[in-house]
Amino acid sequence: MKLTIERSALLKSLGHIQSVVEKRNTIPILSNVLLECGAGQMNLAATDLDLAISEAVTAQTALPGGITAPAHTLYDIVRKLPDGAQVELAYDEDSQRLTIRAGR
Image (cartoon, rainbow, N blue to C red; front, side):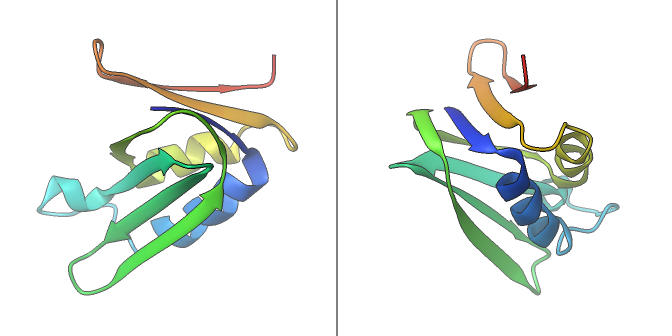
């Protein structure tokens, strides 16, 4: 998975999504957000088993795919990035790491 997205669009969507996710949960996957990209958009989804939320955002997709990431941690990282930055999210299957790049 590899995509580029505007920081403000990603932050707005993560703000909606992370409001559903509880910080402390007995089922670890429920504290994550599902990120799927393909066909020029990224889909974000999360649930607490009572309420589910899904949102689509326009993004430049270089390599389609999907991954889950901790919702609150991802939101905090994106929130601290500079305004107007283009954010690149890339997942490397070999090292199993999600890399976030912004700016230069």
